[in-house]
Amino acid sequence: FEEAALEYHPENKPPEDVQFARLGLIEFRYRYPNGTPPQVTPTPRPYVTPAEGYGCWSRQDMPPMNPTPGITLQQAEEYARKRFPTTNFSTGEQLGKLFSGKHVSVDASGPDSDYQLFEDAWVLYFELGPHPRDDASITRAYGIYVASDTGEILPGCEWSVMGTP
Image (cartoon, rainbow, N blue to C red; front, top):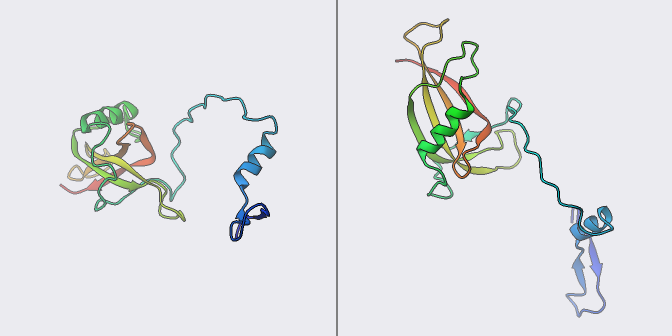
């Protein structure tokens, strides 16, 4: 058994005389010999875009785990616009009209992860005008994932999409 320990308990009758050790309790008592540590309020971490290969990976065919989102599509749009008053482009353009919003379950761990961490989110697509360096006939969109229970922008879950008219 990897990362497990067995203990002998002669006071119990077989097969309960051999049990798994309570490794979490042993580690807790080792780290905190005087009991429970003082409770501190965690400091929220600032938003950081994850490294390449991490972030949200939409499964458009996967329905949300909770079919009733905690926030509405309109609230998700408000949170996204508040978080992104301008897009990450050097031109500083603003998010345009919301043309698509869908409530789905997404894998927030990324394609290279050994595990999957699914979370319900609103997938929002906003219109952007053509980039000044591009052909005016090429339209662009900006996509954002917003957690459907809290309204938080999921880290690494925004991107620019180029398309044709």
